[in-house]
Image (cartoon, rainbow, N blue to C red; front, side, top):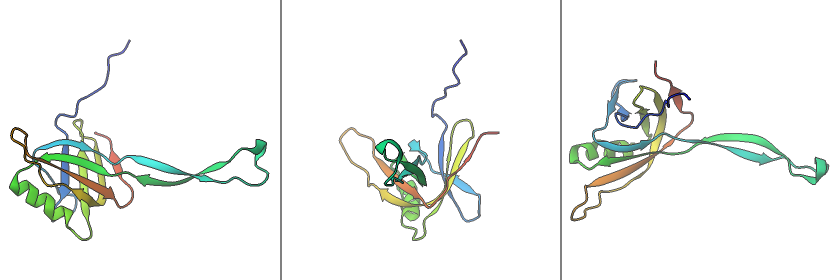
Length: 141
């Protein structure tokens, strides 16, 4: 039996592209991050002579799900996220996994929560970003 190649998420990062292209700044104290998933529509193509009276389907368009992240609330970091969240045209984002693999995409925020304050809970907020189109995955070198 071979040994597992599994890894944990420790040392992953969420970055926002800054003033110059391909220069990403990692956001501090991200506690969880999920890259955009992928779904594909099934388009019905049934006709009056479909074999065996069975519906037929053809592959439709792909759609990327939202990227999500959770971060520890800190006012300067929140200001950075809020600026990105309110950018009219969105921005460019990168999620880096521990092995150096990346997911890079253009997108726009569809949600940003305010921190919840409880007597013993850590202040956190969550963000969601919808990709505008494709997401580029680059395996670690």
